Image 1 (cartoon, one colour):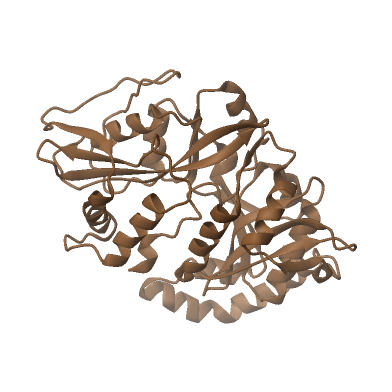
Image 2 (tube, rainbow, N blue to C red):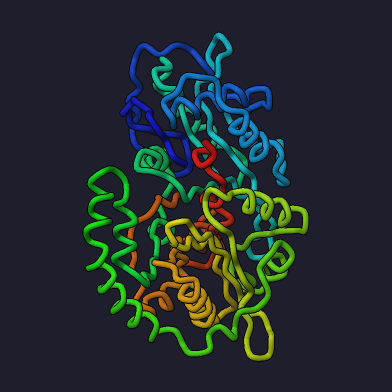
Length: 394
């Protein structure tokens, strides 16, 4: 739930079941209302995105409009009670947007609804400084059982917590297994003239450091880990894998063939994010133990968007994943932390850092307790981080 270029700094207070902070509302804003987003609003919504994220007041590209239509109006989880939201002025102009994607989940056998918050944005200098406040208020007041975002920035976190929602530390951490740590760090500092000069001048030293580091990390991967590499992970194998890796959790996702196929098509379309590859992991008898799905970027970093394992099998799944990363000569592999796998990642000397904020709101305290205790199977495919960023398309 990234909020970009929102100029107002007022506090937020929304009427929820939780204690809230006081509101300071600035004077001088014209009238407006929060309404359900209609497909006819897409050109204006895309134009806001084009301005907010790219600083352009020109008409939005058709590919950007197509993205919003596909994700918010063509997804296989339609729910008339959970529409995306727009902030419309008294003259009918759309100046704000907050996307909502409904996802079916089950909680201890009971079917519930999760609403993913994606792309909260307000047109710069719109003259409606409380538009974002009202969008968040309407979103959290919806009939969904859980409101969730795992892609929020600092401003998004401030809005969410001011509304009575919670920050999840375990969903706000990234793990990294650096095979070539020097190249990984230089890759993060490759922009601009100074970054390019640093990469060129430090390369010989980094190559020596990485050689030593690679040998150390290679010793952590058991010999023969490649034997656990099963068939490629696709929509059908993912669908069969989900019950195996989430069946022991109180909160888990629900998929069917149509939703799995749609999700896989969106993942494959995102070629700007990298080359998608994944595998089922099997034991010596060929039984599935779990699987992983990774985007391999041009900088040779493997971004894990799905990691699942049967109870007690995460160590084997990680070893097979790391063995694949070594054979592909990646500089590092990593993804968002799943609290269920923390111990196994620590055992393998992974590095942890703060990522995007993970945010949640649920009225049922039992659901909140399950999520906070790590009794929830919410992978990167049930949040917003799997979504193809329109920024990659321009």
